[in-house]
Image (cartoon, rainbow, N blue to C red; front, side, top):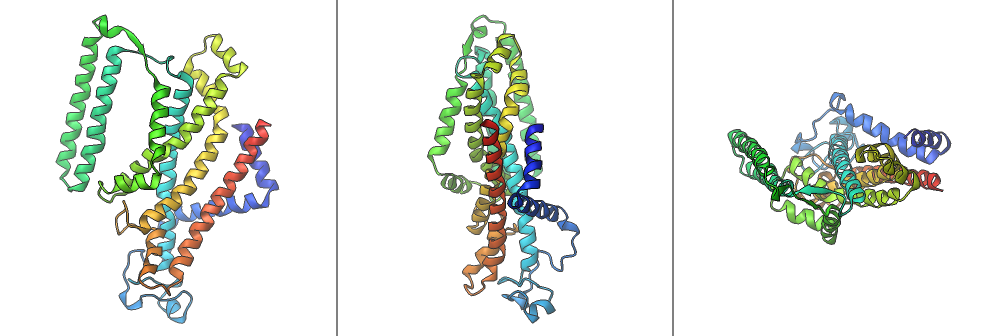
Length: 359
C-alpha cells in the first residue's frame, strides 16, 4: 500500500495529464460536497414557465439569473448540471464501493478455497440454504412490495419481527441438528464452481438488458436501482480477484506461509490482499466511469429512477421536445464526457503503475 501511494505521488509530480485529470475530479468532488451551501439562484426542480428554452449567456438569461439557460419547463440548467453531478457521484461511488468490496471478497474466497477446501457440516449447509432463502424473501421481495404499493411502516416492522423470529428458530434448529451424527458429517462446498457459474450466468445476459428487465418489475427508486446495480456490477471485481488469488496461491512465499500453519484469514489479509489492491483500484475506477454513463442513460430513458430525480440524463432528454436547444445536450453531456474521460485517464495511469510493479 505504501509503495502504491509512493508511485501515485511520483505520478502526480511528473505527469501533467494525470495531474490535470486528478485535479479536475478532486475539484468536482469538492464542489459536489459543498453544493448545498452554494448561493445558487434557483433550485434544480424550480419551474419558471415564463422563461422556457432560454439560451445561455443571453441578455434575458443574465437578467433572470438563468446564466446557463433553461429547459422546456423553465428549470435552471446551472442548478441541474451541478446537482446532476452530485446525483451521479451519489449513485456511482457508493454502488461501486459496495460492489467492489463484495466482489473482491467473493473472488478471493473462491480462488483460495476452491471446490474442496471449504468444508461444512450437513446441518450447516441446510441452515445456510434456509437462511439465504429467508433473507432473499424478507430482505428483497418484501421491501420491493412495500415500496411499490406505499404500504405503511407497520408492514416493515412486522416483516422485521418475523425475520428475527425465523433467524432465532434457525439457530435453535442448528443446535438440535448438531446433536445427531448424520448431520455432523462434513461435505465439501464447491464454492469456486458456484461463483464461476453465477458469474457466467450474469455475464451471459447484457447488463443493460438485465437492468431493463429487472427495473420493469420494480417501482422507481434510487435505493432499489442501487441494489440492482450492485447485483450486476460485482462480477467484474470478483473475476479479477479470483484470477489474482489463483496466481498468488502458487507463489513460493504464500506456500511457505501456508505450510507453517498460518490461519487462512491472516494469509488473505496480510499476504494476498496487499497484492490485489492495485488491480482492484483499476477495476473500481473503470466501474465508476461506466456507472456514471449508465446512470445518465437510465435517467435519459426514464428507467428505474423517479421523474423528479435530478440527473444529467434527465436534462439531456429535454432535447427531444426542442432539437434547437443545443445547450441541453452540450452542457450536461460535455460535463459527463469530461468526467468519464478524466476517470479513465486516471485508470490508465493506475494500470501503468501496476504493470511497472509486475515487471
